[in-house]
Length: 148
Length: 59
Image (tube, rainbow over all chains, first blue to last red; front, side, top):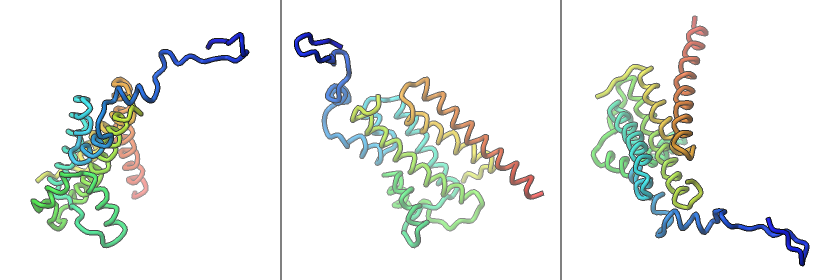
């Protein structure tokens, strides 16, 4: 804070303060939405692109682990939207990105529910998709410099 | 196929969700770990508390 004797105003110095431009430079250059899209398609990939190896590995292990356990519990993958609950389930499943599409192609999660744990499996799959969306948005925030 | 008990399913759910919450909702590694543990305890603790409440109501 520097008082200006000529004008009587107080001037503030930005020396040492992080500006938006500095943050963007630190986060990297290129397509700003790449970590968001990569993180959605492949869990943890957004963080890997930003060289956050530890965070990316933990996120990837958690999300893929939850999805695989959901499939192993004979959880259902939502394929169509017939009512509002199906639409919400489909939106959650789509959050898994390529995991969802490959599983649909392989015919996983299509068997009718026969055991009690299958319902838990369905929830695991939906929640892993929602967690993946949170992780992808986190990668975007890291990319834009909103988060360090 | 994998058929866990109800409580095992709760613990697995709490573990995975807590890891993601911890990493995404805090900035420093120390605070991430603390928040992750906090979320895990809340997930598991609330499941146990609600189970006891439902058990006592059903009696």
